[in-house]
Image (tube, rainbow, N blue to C red; front, side, top):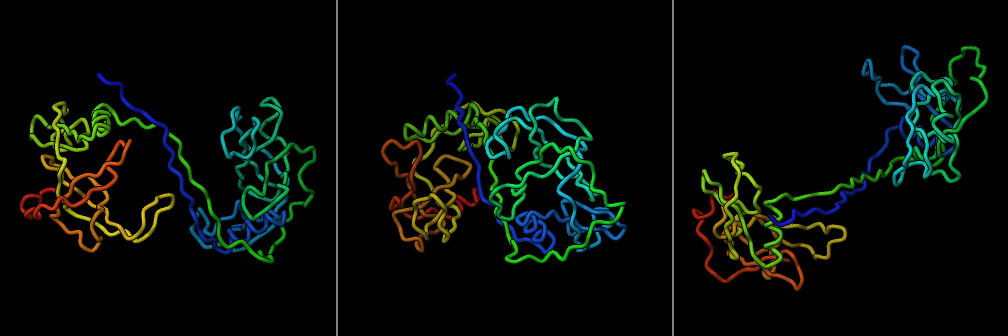
Length: 318
């Protein structure tokens, strides 16, 4: 059996969101070295602040200022920091209840080793040298020898939440690194593509041919092992016109992306349509693959010049 393929893949995108008045005040406060919480109607102080009471679902806007010192409530040691984590040396992830707060804030705790960390230890905020209005304005927590602030049980002081040039939105990068393996069936399909061939697999029960193959029939649930070469010509079943240019994709808009039923296949695959004005692409258009030198898959599909396929020949593949 040929070796099953595998490759490292990365899914990454920036998540952009706007901030309401509470989160805006909290992040702007961090930029100004002020930690804000929000007080509920029953007197609890929540840090980080939220816009709705997690118990009653009541909207809350009563901002208060808490101390930059606090107590570790629980922790876990991170012996091998990953990319983009707060520290590049081993550290503890800790839940820290800041003085004046009733809930704990999760952040990094810089300590020389796990033996130096314990529940109940006192810590304080270490501010980042450059602050932009993000949770990373707290660079980390660090050990602190002082005790709780001597407030005499007084409630944390109110805060208006008003700052110059408030932060109104954030961009949170999301990224997932993983190793993908297409499995036996799709490995054979990909290897065939490198030879400019399309290979599917036939279900032994319903006799349908699936391209790309999945290793099992999605209808019958039985394994598919019989390989069948299909195409190279096919029929456009459905399509869409793309008008928004994708980042890092060197294709001018507008262009057409279509589902294409290759001759002999019982499942349509997708591909870009070229060699024809976008407004002339239509259902039933007969197309063939166009390969570029050294490519492992077709660059796009173009019209063959054949008459359009009759609707009855592909309606089950829509």
